[in-house]
Amino acid sequence: MTRRINVAHAAALAAGALMVLSGCGGSGNAAATKTVGAQLLGEKLTDMVATVDKMGIVEWHGQMLTKSPDKGGKRILNLDARYSPSLGYSEISMDTVLDGNAQQIDYLVVNGRTFFNSEKWGPGANDCWADITDNEDYTWALPRELDPAWALTQGRAVSADGEDVNVSLGYKDVLAGLPKGLFKEVPTLPYDTEAAATIEPHGHLLEVGIDVAGMWSKLPKEQKATLDKRVGYWAMTMKESPNGSTIKPPVHVFDPKVTPPSQCKR
Image 1 (cartoon, rainbow, N blue to C red):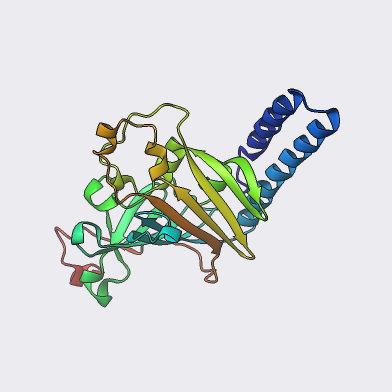
Image 2: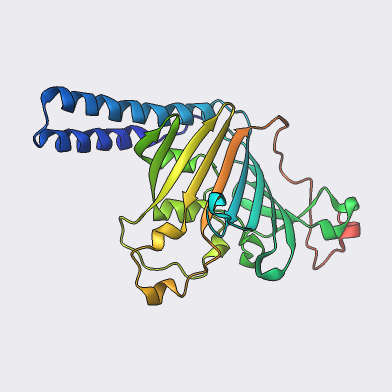
């Protein structure tokens, strides 16, 4: 699946902005140089998206940290996932110690339905899944946007540092890409609120870091006080999965409230 992206739009905006700025007292050559720079910046981001487009199955890993890992951020939630761009299917494993309670859940998302498997059911129920599509208590750790490339396709290129690209992401795009249950109440924000992010290519792997807490910088102190201070920084990596097996629909679907997990295959 080739992703339809707004990178070209972002690059055009950046180029337009630089042309306007350089037109204020700048020479023609300077304006042309800055415009070319903006185009190259957009091309860097486009190349990264193309890298993800070439992946058969995208393996991604996401962590919610209290703050940037460079500043000693602590992990509060972890997602390990495989995503099929061609089918739109996802396998996601979540583990967390949020609120001091260790929790581990395996999710399978197929054709708009969400299923889960619990390690508490035992190895005999590995192929058994319960449909939890409308159960928010179980699906809280899932992002609304399951294609991990959202941070690239929705990014507005701002600047470059070597091969790294700094982008801005609209707050609605950020919230859609994060576990939905982390925000019981989403604060009212100006429509143009953005989060700063950095995308770093490392050969076959792409690394994304998003300053989630920075989105709240313009909120009144009283409103900031109501937000979960543990939700500070989203770190994510993407690479082609070495496990090329197809993500398949669940083999056995059962209702654990009716059927014991030990009998889920009957």
